[in-house]
Length: 432
Image 1 (spheres, rainbow, N blue to C red):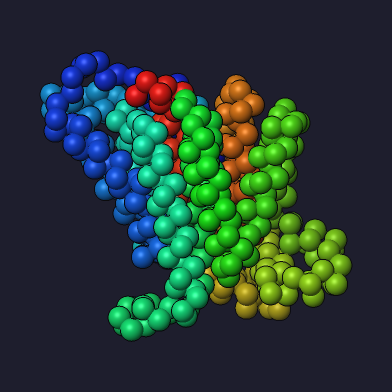
Image 2: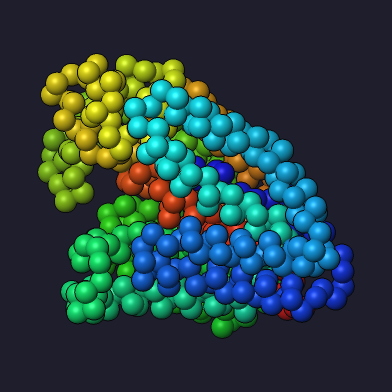
């Protein structure tokens, strides 16, 4: 779903604040929204599913600021939201969400499926509201605050990992007190790292202090990723750095290669388990045993059989959470049926095919290709970090967590908002 997170001024008219002296109330509400956006990585450290809540609170603040600035007229905000929905990407994603909702008619657990649908819809909706409000316009100081919060979150995670989560255990906090609870905040920090580094390094001020801070936050987040348990985050970091460098050196070729890789992965998702099973040597599975590589391939093979049983309409949105109890499980071979109970296939493309079939895959493919076309219109400097984040996020989603998890969608949405809202402001930061 990463391509859904590019809110551009061509989709949403963000330059409509015409009052040269907006009300104090609007300014205060916008400031509150900015603080909430900055605090997201720190709150994720404390509660590893909290990103949608933070994005929702920020959306409420920015929407209230827009309404206050318009003299309590909600019309302009609604018109800009509708403009975003009517954009080419907006239409493709709205169609995907509508198809996902329709697919609940043939899922075996409609209530669970609807909950998964809402978990996907809410952070996307919050992000659209923030973009449409036109009030998230971070100056350089707010970008510095984001970098500092990322450094603090990385440091706090490191301290907790060092002392074996002693504070949480002492406080008797609920949940599993295991080191892997930090995998989500570590990934969120990685996602937000891209806009933080880019906007500090390439912003309008180009101060030495800002570039030093960009280097510091990159070192802090990379350090905690390498120290953490998250193999997915380590993979994502490698892809982010590699894609960023290649996008600067070979901008057009890297864009084309990433688009081709995205399209090929989506198209081949139903048989990706078979391809990997045949191509990867057994020695590689032994070397990557800690990442459960062999287990992932077996899961992909199991879900691949489920896709083959219902290739056109899928098994219904959210059905992956208990696919072993779905009627489609009877069409999966007995040796593979057991792994349908893992909760999700650890691959977003495979999950998309499993639940929404070729229709859902086609709609996401269209949205993705439209996103790449938009990236192609940017300068190489502006394109590189966005393309790198897309590549890293798509690779992580293709081998890692569930596709529709709200914290993941919210983190990506927040990164996109920082990119788009900070671009023009960063250029004129020295005047702001």
